[in-house]
Amino acid sequence: MWNYIVNHFRRLAIDYFYPYIKKRSFKSYGPTGSYRVIRLTKHTAFKKCIFGSLEAETMSFIAQNTSIPVPKVIDHWTMSQGGSEAIVIEWIQGNTLETVWPSLNDDQKACIAEQLHGYIQELRSLRQPVHLSGQICSLNGGPCNDPFLLGRPCGPFNSEQEMNKFCLSRLARFSWEPSTLVRINAVRDKLTSNHCITFTHSDLTPRNILVDDQNNIISILDWEMAGWRPEQWEYLKTMWMGQYDEGWPAFVHKFLPDYHDQLDLHNEMCSMHGSPF
Image (tube, rainbow, N blue to C red; front, side, top):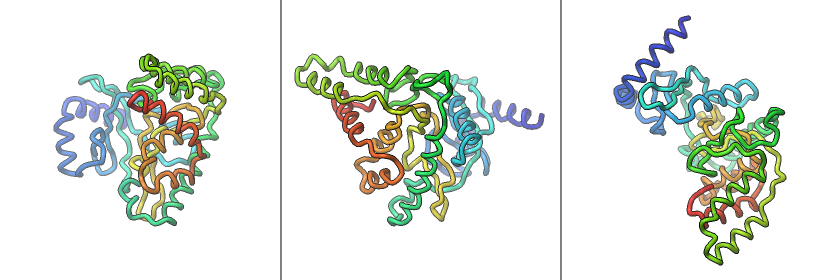
């Protein structure tokens, strides 16, 4: 009963006084590293997003079925002002891998990579529900929220083959140019659709990995893009965000299988399209 009352009044306060709360939070706690996340108290934070309910459900699922450290979900709802979704989560004090990366030596990076490898194995051990078998979708079978595919939700796809067709369809408007058509056909010939479908974070980048002062991972953040994806997808997304940063590719190869051939294909599609898939 008490939690219900606290959540109710917290929702009202955030819904109607969000600009003031955001200003007070910045003054009291400083920046959080994300414009969508503000501190509410010493131990709680608020995130305003489009798919808050799904992210909350996903984090709860991960907490219940793996040992992967994620923020505890305290509350989530749809805001009355503007219709955005909101999550209140546990605030975990630490440093992002992005912040500490320049100061880490090879042994420290290897230690973090070993931890990530274990967490990836746990994600891949999760079994897709029978009624979703083979589908590429969110945790609960809904659309994919992944700008690497499209800037808005798309799918769900019944198979990897269907997802590949979708990606290729986005190149159709460029096929009038003969040399581009040759490139599109070359990509089509090389795309495969026989990968396992595994649960995937889809945004496993340095800003979403939180470590303590001993470089132990204390939280994996930002699960709004997570879902059931082909096994290479974690590699594509993780490499895409840092493939040109010194040391990042070698680091990724310590905790994820190498799918450089698939990365090359997606880079080729992106170069034709002008934006990520």
